[in-house]
Amino acid sequence: MGKVTARQLLKMKRAGEKITMVTAYDYPGARLADEAGVETVLVGDSLGMVVLGYETTLEVTMEQMVHHTKAVARGCKNALVIADLPFLSYQITPEEALRNAGRLVRAGAGAVKLEGGREVTAAVKKITEAGIPVMGHLGFTPQSIHKFGGFFVQGKTSTDAVNLLEDALALQEAGAFSLVLELTPWELAAAITRELAIPTIGIGSGPECDGQVQVFHDLFGLCGDFQPRHAKQYADVGGIIREGLQRYVGEVKKGVFPGEEQSRRMAPEELALFREALGKRGK
Ligand code: KIV
Image (tube, rainbow, N blue to C red; front, side, top):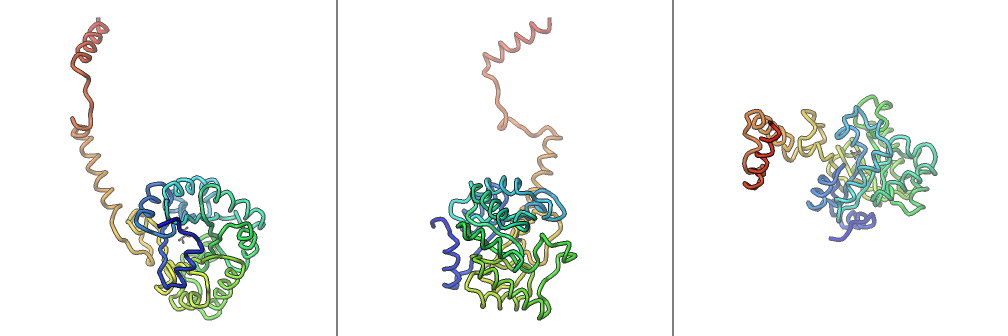
């Protein structure tokens, strides 16, 4: 498989082939996703919550996104790397949005993602016109957490649903190559997917999207006890790591680790000389 491109995702939608996307924030996570055949790896600003321990994504900076995008890009041979534009890096002026998108591309991203509907189409247009593919993000958009008042499903009323559909069409019109639909009702996500020529990638939006995205740490039990309803845990890696760490602590306390195998000894003649030197120092 060669490097996945934005155009290829469009072809996959046309062919009815589901698209997979997973977040990654570092080199080993990116390598694992890439080697597993995931087509798109998202350096999400969920970085703030699952890696940096913030309450929301709002604290994530451009510097942090650039730093983590570089690591992820080094781990992806085939997958398309999409990097999130963080809070206030694209909302102020389209020029600033383009400058920041350019920084992520220079860090190794093949595309960028930003949140919002009609209010961000000028930024989408500016960035795409400069040759950088842009992914939109509608429904529950975490950078607007204070507006929503919590992690709630969006587009539940017919008015809100029509509004979201209009936003989706506006993003497509502005040049977006794909859209994430987060926490929207199944029926709305299905309708948007049918209406759009560009692929939709769902998270908590039902199975009829053209693809699915999940947060890496949710898939593998790496976020403590909290498991969002839209996430499915495929392996309890967190449990395995916890158990391993407990064994490590126990072995160090008991003096069992490190043993002969993890240690190196001096050559006998050097050891003899060393002991002699120690003896002289003792005098
Ligand atoms: O930041 C992120 O991880 C995201 C996904 C949830 C789509 O935007």
